[in-house]
Length: 449
Image 1: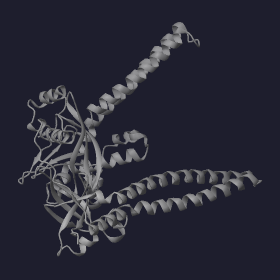
Image 2 (image 1 turned 180 degrees about the horizontal axis):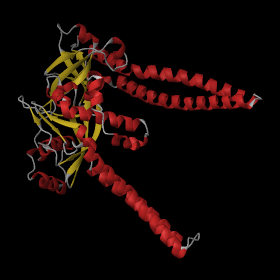
Image 3 (image 1 turned 60 degrees about the vertical axis):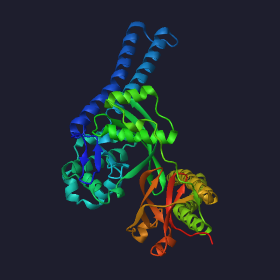
Image 4 (image 1 turned 120 degrees about the horizontal axis):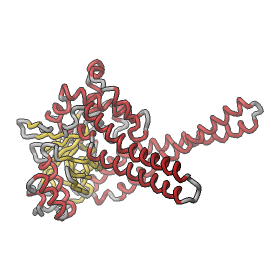
């Protein structure tokens, strides 16, 4: 088996399993990466040393120019070969799951850093985690993403989870259970798909709390269910762009799977139902939810603005003291404090800009809320609310799991719930608010008077 877990209810779970021999796969990847990075550079220095011994390296000479070209060519070769091997040995795929559920929806999750990993961190005893401590060789990955400590530590924790999951199948149990939608997100659109010899690179979007999250993933033919998963993604790509891929790309997919799924053909998709505008009462609910979703950014903007002003005052005062203080020791201390305050001002400015960008987006949504539309839902149920303090920093404290149909296909999402619907859920009808084709939140239907 290459990663398929078929359930009695028809749900199918796929994952790349060729990297399950963790230490072996890591050593093979590390050896390949080291060879690709170092051999071209070592060859360049060897060639330069030989040329220097024979011809010398006078500035402006032909030998010096040749050495320069050799070094540049070898650096380019090192970068290209490293990129190639990293694409063809995507060890991180062992954390990624694709789920085709019983309703024909394609779901995705990264168990190494998503809700599954959070469940593992919170619920698995420390004694079990210690038993799953990864091989010390994984500590070499502190180079990961150029963040020396955090990157290596994060990857080691992911490997610890993977080692535990190999024994206990925690991810498979959560994705096979009734609440599997809490641990994965539905793939709703595909923006690009490109095939290469032994797989494809796909850029797709998933839904989380009404927001689209863009992901890029390499999928390989070694994964069982490759044809089913990629055919579904091709259909989403066709729907979005109303066209199929180029014939060479489709022929490459055909060679990979021996036959192209019907999803690659131009289908006759059902038209999206006519949009139903929001009433005045519904518009009021929507605007309250938009404000609730973005209130955290307002809070952080005020917090960092206050911290920035205080840091600016401290920077000026400590800088002046460093100039007038006679003792060198105190002068150095004030200079250090002034430099720290200056850096803090810059960091606060960066976070203020980020928060203000989100606030600006919130203002646009408030102004354009009358363009949102509503749609009937198939079913929905509440999700247990978080504790009050923890929910204070979430987009919504009260959420619901929603199922709806769009363009003839079933979808599901976890969305925020308006307080009015929460208070009148037994006496009113819940409707889904859509921004274009993206679900935003659940509100109480209020017809126009």
